Image (cartoon, rainbow, N blue to C red; front, side):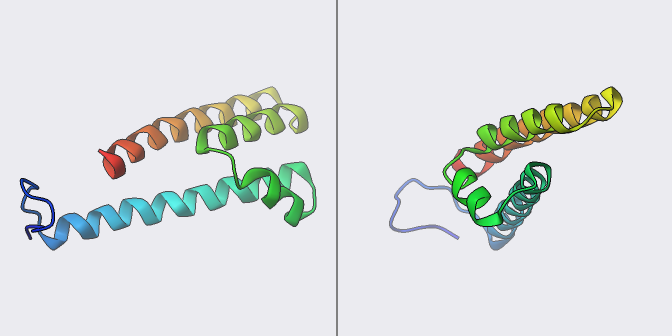
Length: 102
């Protein structure tokens, strides 16, 4: 498919756009999971939590999740596991931005 509105743009087929949509949807679901994790750890009102986290970048949400994990979780091995997960998600966020935005 060639976009006539953007001369010089590459010819891309529908499979490309379907894959792009899957990446975007999967990451949106991941961000929702991060939000619910923050809410659960903060043990707070969901409206206040939504208000506080909505304007945050994904990296800032991950930082908040990491901080809450350190505050709430007493078990050092659990904190380490969560830190590793957050680090991997951070890398995925960079990959997602490169894929979606170029």
